[in-house]
Image 1 (tube, rainbow, N blue to C red):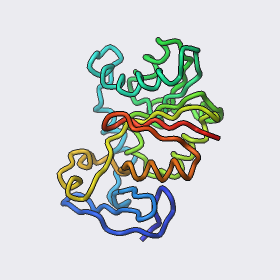
Image 2: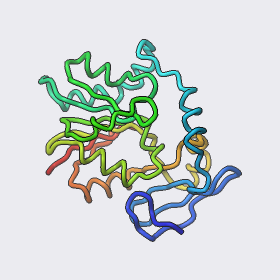
Image 3: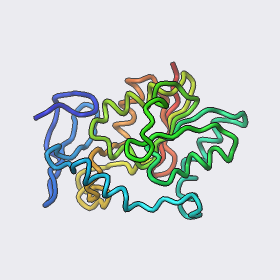
Length: 213
C-alpha cells in the first residue's frame, strides 16, 4: 500500500468500501482517501467540472460562499488586503465578492484559470472553497496553500468534514467521483500543529487557519 498522500505515513488501514471504490484512513493524520486506482482521468474529471454552473449573479451561490467570506473578512479587518482564490472553478465568485469588499484578488484553477505565476508569491489570505476534497496529491497542494500565506495571514477553507465510519457509509459527499480526499477535524488539528497554524471551525464546513510563524 502506498503511503498517506497527505503526511506520507505508512500507517494506512482499510476504512470503507462500496460498489464504486475502496477508501483508506491514515492512522497519523486521519485523512480518508479513495483508492488511487479508482481516480477519473483528467478528461473525465474536467467533463464533470464542466457540469458545474457557478454564476456570480446567483444569489443562492453567494449566500453559500458568504459562510466563508463573512467570518474571514471579520478577521481581515477593514484595510484592503491581497488574496488568492485557489480552485476558483469555471465561474469565479468568491474572488469577486472579496474584491467588492475592497480586497485585491487573484485566482487560480488548474482547469479554468491555469496561471502558475500567481502561485509564486505570498498573500495576506488564501481561500479554497469546495476544492481540497478534489486533491489527488494533497501533500503538494497543501504545501502550496500554506506556503502562499504570509506570516500572520489567513487560509480560509470550505469542505465537508468526515466523521466516523458509520456516518461515512451514509455520506453523500463521498459519492461524487471527483471527491478523493476527505478531511476531518482531527486532520486539521494535525496539520495546524505540524505547520504552525491556529485553527478555527466555523459551522459545519468552514475552517479558518492563521499562520502564526
